[in-house]
Length: 467
Image (cartoon, rainbow, N blue to C red; front, top):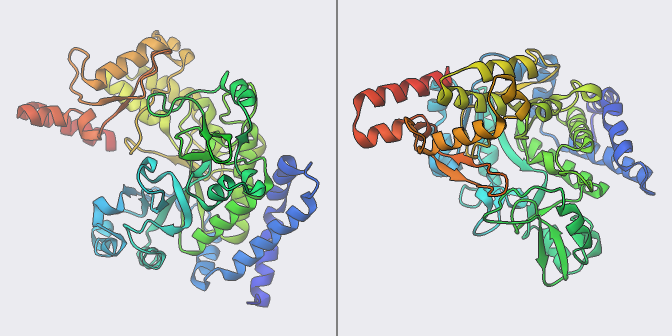
């Protein structure tokens, strides 16, 4: 299908607008590859093809949001997050809930992982075997498009998860790698023996030390070690291979053309590997993310990027664009520190640490970006409180983190909470906590004892957290 003269001109204008933001990053990442010139041409060809396929109504939305670039920053933007099956059974059921979503003022709906996961344990849907298919338990891609269209008609933006760090072991690329395809093996980080993995392990952290210790998994059939940061079935992608960038932009454009408004990029901090580091938040991660955003500004500028990086305040801000990436990287990033500081202040009955952290680390205004604020989510809470910040208000980092875990587990004297420990690290003493807002705020414990006064106080904590 050929582009009209109008669409061709519009594509060229947007390409020129973001050309340097895209190709300067790609040259820095992949410029030494012998086929870089051909790779550049492939990137441009795939962008043009995706723009050609973009539905007409979405092209009009692109125009509207180009004229209103702050649309996602406005104070009436209210997010609502749910698991499709828990909320409505399936995607067709979501259509029956549109009036309810409108009634509560939701203007942004995040479907928890809805792309096709591997069978069995899929890390809650974050082990994806097909980025172009919907979880069959929820419906089909046609059902998804119908929901996206219905949302647009009511002014509701749709957000879905797109995992960038890894795929499921059952993904077609991984299956081909297992069968010995050298090109697909290069899509991942695979090693003949433990020499390099052991060297990397010296500075790597374990994400799930209880369930998936270490960062590598041995695969019998190819006889190689595979980098698996999270779980044995989640194979880390090799972002140093430019083919991965090509594959990911194809998927990104595909989802955008199905009606996605917000792409929540999962586990972005881990995308680039460097010996002697934690392999988290390396400079190349920000180069990749800027390039992905620039590609979207060319092909589907109605789409914005939410970057999931649950890291310290110092590490978090660059995901919204700092320095050379200012205004060019993520549109949204989770304000993990605000969430942590709320729970810290609630347990300590003291806002000194919250005040210090928010005043010293977080600017009130960001360029072309804003914070995605939240109070609880599906993930556990890691107490991202640095030694420096804790000491600034007269406490110690390890001591305060231990206090918070004990308090929200419910074992600290006077605690109202009933949470569950998660990811206990015996070496460092750090413990993460999991639990719903109601459980951590004391409502579960209060209901269990039928204490009306405690129920009232718990509800007040819930309301304060959402204020």
